Picture (cartoon, rainbow, N blue to C red):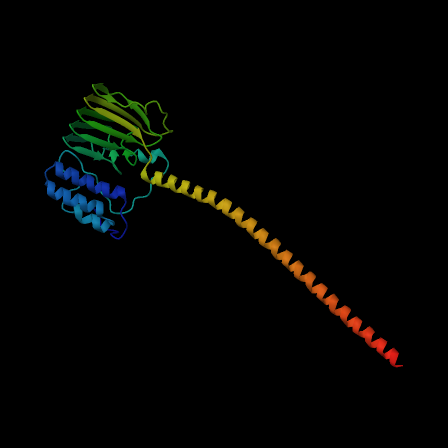
Length: 280
């Protein structure tokens, strides 16, 4: 980890990458369960890079058979809409996972290898590819589930092919046959399920869901604002008409009052003239 910008706010993907390092350290015996739980709790409570950095400072960036994901403490540029930028080549950041009466997760910003092997016995696992990069245009997720289950989550636009075998279990094939976007990776789900199952699900990322939610909220506000604006316009027009009516009425009253005053003055002049004529 680097400490280039400790004051920057950390994202969910940043916290998940740190959690992945902790899980690998637990599996390798570098942390006991108590230390793992304490650090994992601190990870999910962390708000900035400065709070995340000390959690894995004493852990190597890579050790043993599994290469732990490299964690950058600087903001990475947001991935664009082009799939070409997510097919990065090289080796995957994690090539296998095991859950024996427990569970595992691979999620966030990680690199899917050409072949990822996972095994679950009386346990479960989640392989989330929504924010992942891909080592190749075509990757294989090989799942073996014995009295357990696994869930493969892919983003929209990815082509999925399911070739697993189930005995008193099964492989979810609902997402198979959906055409992929041009240049998008192809994910092949293979393996074996005995008294267990492997599910395949297509989901939006949290950021995309939040963006759509915000768009729907704005549309509702716009729809509510339109009748309010129309009602306000009608009320303004009614007030203007009422004001004009009152002004016209006041003008009429002023004109009539002026006419009466002029009539009274004329009557007084005529009366004075009659008195003068009688005097003469």
